[in-house]
Length: 145
Image (cartoon, rainbow, N blue to C red):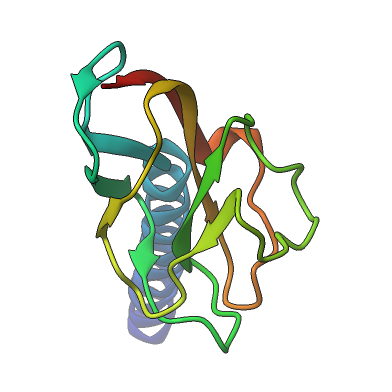
């Protein structure tokens, strides 16, 4: 009888530990699902009138900034798109006069822009410049005097 009680006691603790481990794994997964991932302009603000060179300060939440080169889950770097909205998810962002890469992990830049109205879009992409798409982009309109 004593052996049966010891067995039941040990068995009940081994089952409860498994449930705790499963519960903690589910809790971590729930937290990861809740983490907001987005990019944003710290400066300038939407609708701003600015002078050239235009100082742009870029931010990101829920991801880490890392120089280009290696694809790692949860990491990437900024791109600025001039007079265009987000870059489609899964597509490589090419380098051009209107798609600027910040593959060294930069978070700010001063851009020489002619006077006029511009749509400036911030786009986050992975280590080989593959876009995270619309959910990791933000667009603002500015007026350069």
